[in-house]
Length: 331
Image (cartoon, rainbow, N blue to C red; front, side, top):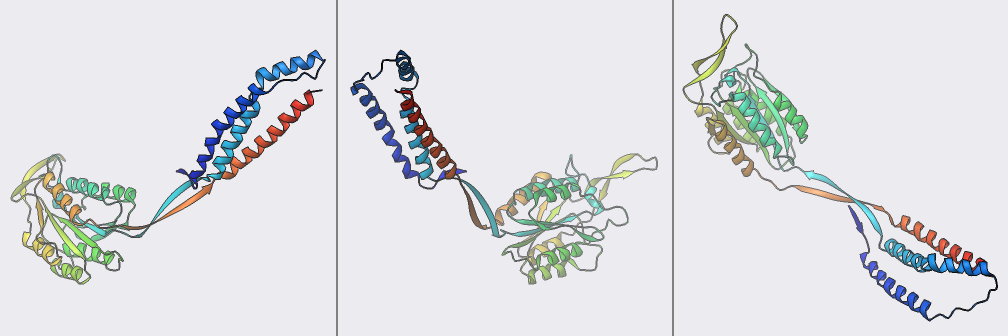
């Protein structure tokens, strides 16, 4: 961004029209006197009148323009923002157990629907730090708290369901790891968003106990249930290696996720049975968790007036040189 520190100096340019008028009047009133007997000199004067007649006034006007710009102090300003506090620290705790392959969010399965909505949510939280925790039989931190959207989007896009044998559901472990990431955070607002489609069936930490630990650190917990009740389509591979779908019943403990949300201070769990409902839930959380961002703004200025001073000095020397040449041409 370019600006001027003292723009009031541009009023000085108003003298240019006055200077031009005076110069024209002076030329008209001046009575020429012939001092020469040399016709070559007359030819030179003729050329000077036709070509260089207005050169002195042009140089004067340019000199005034560049001096005025220099006095106005042009500069190039760079704005730098330094965040002193983040709006919120948020950890998404995403279920990657085998049941997330159920295809009741057509045309997507639960995993792909969750990833799509999570990416949209993260894209709207550019001033917050976001972390990613996944859990199945085991819980892992995929991304610690960061506001690097490129890293977050790459990691979330690459999330897959846990392999067979490690695809159970340890909700308590997932919450506990998220609490560990948030408990020492300096942010005023610390949030866990739990996204699960099943019932806790493994892990060392009970989900209710994990929610109480989160509450003891002042961390709010949103619980989001994903999936339909009853029978759902689930992909299976038959003996011939062909992929097909069969109707299965996936257990879901709604009482547990409701209790987690209540202890976490966010009311009852939000339940979704399709992509539109899931998107609406994350839109609601996004609105509920708007926070004020505090930031220091620093401006760095690069002064440019010296370049206009250089040009003005060059114009002054050119005026002196031009006047000397004209005088030398006269006998």
